[in-house]
Length: 293
View 1 (cartoon, rainbow, N blue to C red):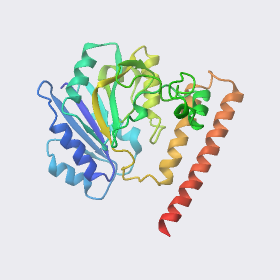
View 2: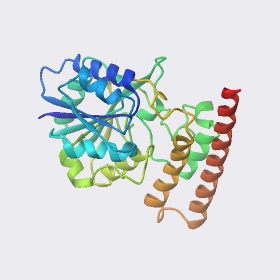
View 3: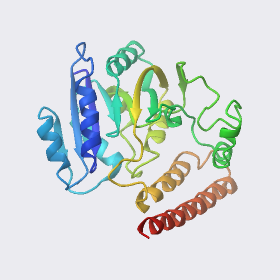
């Protein structure tokens, strides 16, 4: 088996079906692949509808919502492919995306993770598809939106590597878990996704460990997908989702930067992140109240 495609579903019947349609209509004549859909206890009939529409997929239904990392790891354990692709349910692949990426990956055995060009629904680049590991300085510049004000600056644009040409191939720090192709041999060496992350951050953490093992993480823009963000069954105003975003930052810093930065810097990052989390949760609560009025 050449490729195992893992898709996590949580109350996203419509978008997951669109994603699967794009996969099965892709030009995959040169490869053998399987699709594994892991349902995070949707209990809304979406898993059953997806299986009815695509009976050849492997469907795994969890008893509870385990989050993104655990659900993908369940899919990885069931995978039989030489290469694993994490693919968000809210994406659509182009007809040539899968064979292009797989061919390039197999031709470069030093690649530990490969990502493609990810476009948002309006055609703009999803900045998460090519970025650097978060540092205290790049995080501050990103929070202050200095990267948007000075996108060509290597200093201010470090967080999302805004100064890089989006149409060129790069070996960089990390790519997005919305589309991440990883050889199974690399997974056996570095381990699966860290399940301390409920959602968000697990892709950055994985890329960090893959690079630590000596492999390249590559942005490959000759293949594209469309990413319809914030259509998950969680909902963009779910406080658990908001909290998970900021919690992921703290988990990453404590895990990988404990010895890299001074206690003062780590403390400042932790306090700052918690303040941003509290502000985001308050803003989120007000938005929900306004929506109900």
